Length: 324
Image 1 (cartoon, rainbow, N blue to C red):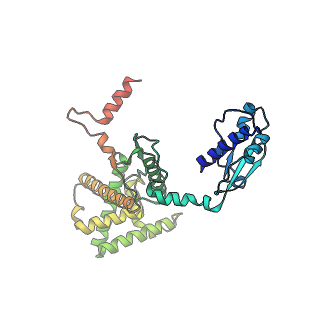
Image 2 (image 1 turned 135 degrees about the horizontal axis):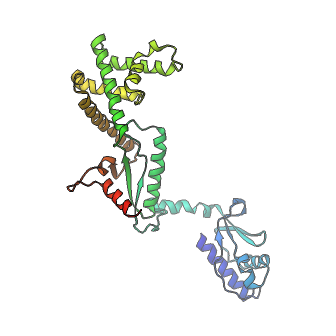
Image 3 (image 1 turned 180 degrees about the vertical axis):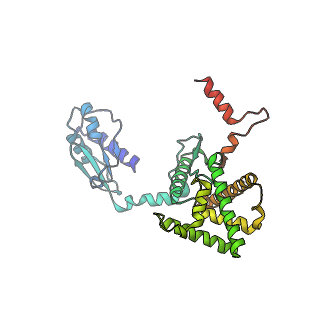
């Protein structure tokens, strides 16, 4: 519709000049745009104000001459001059709704552009640590990030979606030791109380709930396992319910196999096993909400040494040192 209105305005100016109602001047940009206030029409033109100096004529007079000579168009219900020389166009209902037919006709291609011209871009988003399940806050970034990628692809950018997996560093050790501690507590409950694995897990969950409710620690007897968990790990732990559920699965699969195992080896094994378990959950959640990634980039890969004993991190520091 923008192009149609611009052409009508140009025809009106030519007709007004031919009739002597407007002096001769070159018509440049007709200034067709959407008004900020819909009460001022569906489209507006600022051509009268843009041409006032060239025409040596008041904008309001130019606007009136244009409206007087404007060709009829069935899609335009009325045209008005407003303010210092705005020409406001009001469309009829059929014309206003024509955009729906345009969208239906174009389908998924509607609004596509070639702004990106195939330029490669990488968008990294969500990237929550693989030490716990995704929550609603991560869902916000999934929605924003994936929507941004869709817009970029629609503009013909070559988009790569990346989830940066923060699987290197102390948080992974803390994650592993947290699962180990809960596993040992489940083993203790099964052994000493003769309960099932599921019952042991429920006891730990109830103990944790009691700990949360006992904010002032006036009933320590109601949460001995949570207190022991914190004491053993010095408060440097992941204490959510999901840690208990992971430990429950591990015990359900292996029984007390790891109770008397070497502590350091056990922690390393549990860290890797819990990491893979949690990353699988995260990937499944992302896929469930249709937020799939082209690249799951492990932070560890940046520290892996190549055949020459050099990692990506080593190369990066070398480059930075050269440009200090």
